[in-house]
Image 1: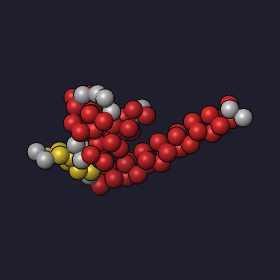
Image 2: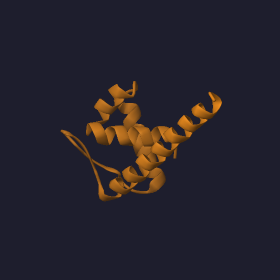
Image 3: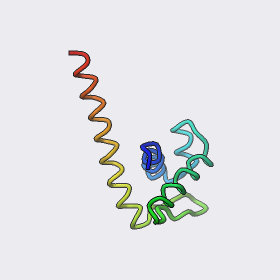
Length: 88
């Protein structure tokens, strides 16, 4: 599991679309899809229901999304603390 996969997941949830997430994250929709499928394979669960009008989290996906948000927030806090410490 990589942080980038968690970023792709959380942005896809916010945008309800892999293609819209790709635009915001400066990558391609196939790259987002491939990364999410790899994460699903690693976890052994389907994270999204894919449809013609976008994507929606499965029940397992909701659990992973909540944890991903916490992990990414912790990483952001760590980076901020390091920055503050370096500049004091």
